[in-house]
Image (cartoon, rainbow, N blue to C red; front, side, top):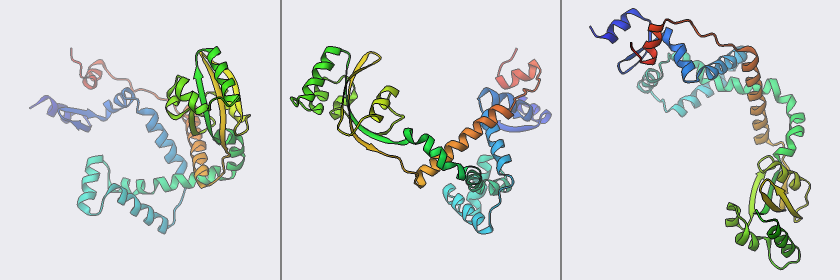
Length: 267
């Protein structure tokens, strides 16, 4: 009788990978080792939160149909193959098929009425800009380029291609559209206070001297796409808070011999 066979007879085996048999006792240390415990805790927190969320039969059938289509399950053979590959029962799969729908309903019930004030709070970071930039480490060069642009001797695009020392040189200094929270905070501050077409004098940021011009300012709107994004942000923030405040991990005590079995070490 092989070592694996003897181990399988003496333990509650939940997973077998090649010649390695994993017992339920060994599973926790492995989840911890591969940093999967926080994600497991998050999924349990979500399941607890959506436990009382209900769906109509029509919603359930549609969610199930769309879910099966995404998994490319169209018959019993494909269903069995998928269940076997994921170690799940059909009952678990049925619950999984409506889980995303319940999560979206939970988000709406919890935060839909908070989106307007949250949008106002975040709007400054959601606004988008198109801007032009020249950067150089020589303050004298930066000042000279600024005056040449101001006096109309050269365009910013021409000078960016020739003198800018970043990847923006390839686009004639043009960057964007990007959200205001994307550039360096000091750049974002200058752009937020600028008018389209306004050229800002050289500003030092770290080792660089930066010349900026705001080309276009696009104010964020609370449309469906933005609503969904903000709902997701609020949900993820809530989930992180729940994980930090309500979850503690208690590793089971294992003997040295058992620890060797899941680390693959032997004496």
